[in-house]
Length: 327
Ligand code: ASP
Image (cartoon, rainbow, N blue to C red; front, top):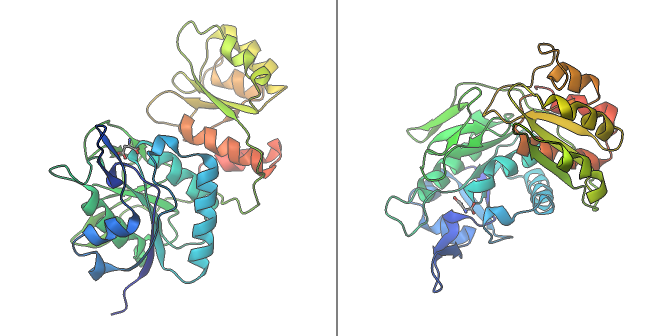
């Protein structure tokens, strides 16, 4: 049997971290080091390795991910069957979503990491990497967009969230659950969600800063109003519940929409922003009528990245709707 050819591309994260002389763990291992440490990996895939970065995942940037997407588009077009991106778990949901928006084609791209370092008892990195490689090499995972695989669960990029700071079971897709599992070394897909649009336009190099603001009771809107003056090119508001802000902020939103795109998400753990239920000032009907865009089911962090990508791609505001809509 010919083994699938997959690329393991490492960006760092706990899965690569070993104890440093100064205390604490820091990223040291490469994709090749990790590949050599996973029992059974050679039996499931022929792997190639690349280690462009060795960083904690809080230090990754959108430009880093645009570079990763470029590498994946090139390498997957060149005959690989799939790819695994290895990185820190803190921002896996963001990386998976950005790659889902920028990597074309139907070959599986899987993001994975580990909650425990390789020197800990019960390290979850080797198991996660093996499961990710199985999914990346499988025909069953084709056409599903970018996936996150941890704890033998397969999550869609749009849905997945880190939901715990410590447990190996930290990843959840609270809206609809994982779309599949790795069972007995096999990729089992139980749900096939639609995939959002992939942007193939080249992105401008100039950054497009987008602020992410979470609403709390009594917010007086001064931060919101200050954003254009601070150089922000857009804002995502994590509103209360189904997409609401204090009444006093409704006019601030109107003034903001004149200057920069405003996207409305929810600070609730999950669930779509509403569009036609609440009619009071600051409710979703009012804010959308004032020109805010709905983030749909996207979390605030994902909506922020999507808006940055749309701004850098030069997509007209009139075209935003299809990117935020449910696929
Ligand atoms: N702080 C680490 C990171 O995101 C956490 C992890 O990898 O689990 O790089």
